[in-house]
Each structure stands twice: as C-alpha cells, then as structure tokens.
Image 1 (cartoon, helix red, strand yellow):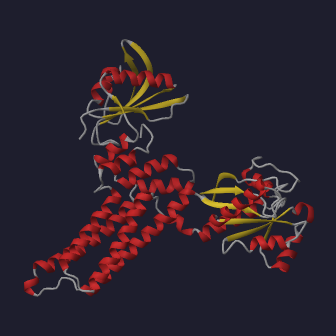
Image 2 (cartoon, rainbow, N blue to C red):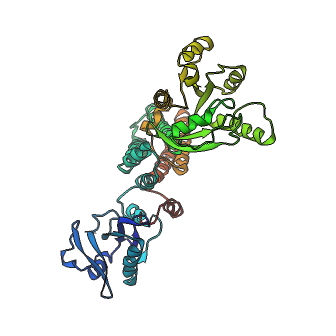
Image 3 (tube, rainbow, N blue to C red):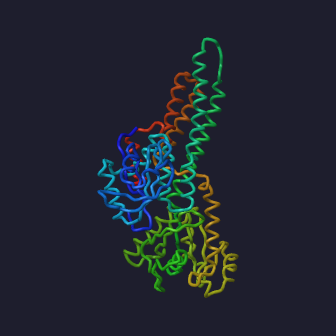
Length: 451
C-alpha cells in the first residue's frame, strides 16, 4: 500500500543500555543489507549480530531482526535494530538510513500502517497508545485485553446480529408477493431490544473505563488542623504537604496521583473548611467545596482529641450522598478505644489512624480498596474508550431506540432496512472499518514517534 520506507527510534531518546530503531517499508531489507556487515545471515525473524557501516566507518555493533511482510507488526517488510542506547549513536545510525532514501516516520505512523494493512483494528491501535501511557495496573490490563480484541469482538457480535436482522427484513421485501414472513415485527422488535441492551452494556463499560483511566478522585476533607496534610503525607509516603500546628496551613488544593487496588487515584488535600479569616483562605475553602462536589470518594478526617464537633457535622451534612470514609486521626494521643466510643455515640463507622506514627494505615488502605471494589466494581470488566467511541455509542443507542419505535408503528420495511444498514456502518466506525481520513489523522497524531 505504501511506496516509501520510514524509520524512527522505538525507544526513548535517553542514555540507556539499549535502544531500538525501527524501519518499515519496501526498502527495509535492501538498505539494511547494504549497511549491515553480516547481511548474508539476515533471515525472517532471526536475530543476527553484526555492525552498521556508513562510509566505511563502524557506527555501532548491533543485533538486527528482519521481518518479511506481511508477517510483521506493520504488515510490511520491517527491520528492527538493537544498538547501544546513546542518543548520539542512535542518531548516527538513523542518518545512515536517511542517506539511503528512507524518511523519518511521523507520530504513530507504524501503528497507522499496521491498521491500514489490516494487522490491527482501530480499537487495538488506540489500545497500544493507552498501554504506552498507562498509569495504573488496570489500564495496562485493559489495554492488553483491547489489543487482543476485547472491544472489537463485542462490537462485531452486535453487528452480526444487526446484519442478520437486516437480511431477514430485506428477504421479506424481496418475497413480499409470496406472503412469506421471515421475521415478524414483534420478533424483530424483541431482537432489536436485545441489541439495544447489549449496546447499552458496552456503553456503560466504556464510560466506566473512561472514568477509571482518568482516575478516581479521592478528597481529604475536614476542619483545619485535624491532620489532613499529615494523612496525605502518610498515604504518599513522602513529605508532600506542609504540616503545622497552625490552623489553616493548607490554603489551596494539593493534588497527587497514587495507585490503590490497581486503579489510579487522584488524591487531593484541601483547605480546612471553617469560617474564613481572609480572602485567600476564603478562596481555598470555595475550591474545597467545589472539589468535594466532583469527588468519587471523600475521606472525612476527624480529630480524636476534639471528638466529633458541631462543625464536623456541618461539613458532613454538605456531602450530599457522596461515598464517605470517616477517618479518626491522632489516636496516638487519645488511644484507639476512643474510636469505638465515638462510633457508638455518633453513629459513624470510624477508622482509627495516627498519621504521625502510621498506626491504622493498613486498615485505611483496605477500607479504600473495599470501596473501590464495591462502589466501582464495573471498572474491572470495562473498556478503554475516548470521546470518539463514547459519542458513536451514544448515537447508536439513539438510533436503536428509533428503530424499535419503527417496529411499533409498522414502518415500511425498506426504511427499517436502511436504518439497520446505517447502524452497522456507524458501529463499524468504532473498529475503523469505516473511518474518515481526518479522524484517522487525529487519532494517530497522538501517538509517540516510533510507534
């Protein structure tokens, strides 16, 4: 499909033990044979040791692997060179290839060629980029599953059901003069509702995956000087937030990312909620309130030495149905028994913790993990999806609802068949079977060079 040959480093431009240079296109084998000293041993999928020469100079001793198209990542003839990881060495080797007429690859061009040559579908290509940029165990697992067709397979199953239904509708049109009913509108409506339910399930799993990939927002909230910053430092295992006995030390949001139970967590320390003393503190408190509104989980930090005060209860009343974990801090001063006493008296399930010496941290981590697994369990079976996929799914759901209503009003079968065809084409955009070039350009431009 492509007449030119491209080249780019597939590893980061930093000093390292090894670097990888990737070449793909019709001239891969010819140019590699010209520059590689041990070219007689070059063979499909065999690693060969030798040197790269340019103008009689040895640029580096390397391992070269040749892939004969279509049996390669891109589906073309392809070469991968493993050299020493000095960026200067990598640059010299690449310039040697450029001199022979090979051009630099653009962002995502190897993956784009793999897609256009039918080696991967669009969901698999996007999953490659997600894997490279993954920031949690879940994202890595979901990316690999999607590279192996988890989302594509679900979409294909739906399209097959729609195609079969469309075929039955069209058969009824072709044999309308013979009074043969291939599928009744009642049965067709039931089938369409099943398709709609499956599509809705995929959409929910994609939405859950989108949320999980962006990270769950976990907010530390409470009055000033209850130990929110100390607790954040304990969770992060570093001195990230300033800790002081002076109330109101934290006046703005402090945000860090951690991983709990395989999921990325956006942990935010907030300004203590109280009667503001100045404009800066007032702004910090307003930002805190806004952040709490958007939070997935709130860690309400309470001071064991003060008990649960009226101000604490006022803050708690503002959470509006949020999932809240109640953390009783400073038990190193009061003793752990106070947690049970306050729980019985106030009716809150308290997790006793000492941010100062780490007591109760494992119990806190287990509680957070339990909430993630219980409240956000859908993420485990969810898909990675961006705005493009979510928008296609939303439009498809609207269309399925419209088709179901068409069966209810006995719409002409020709019109229903047309709508079913439109629906299959729309779903094909997810996997890339039907995708405009400008959309492809937008997708692959987000990839790193060399992938």
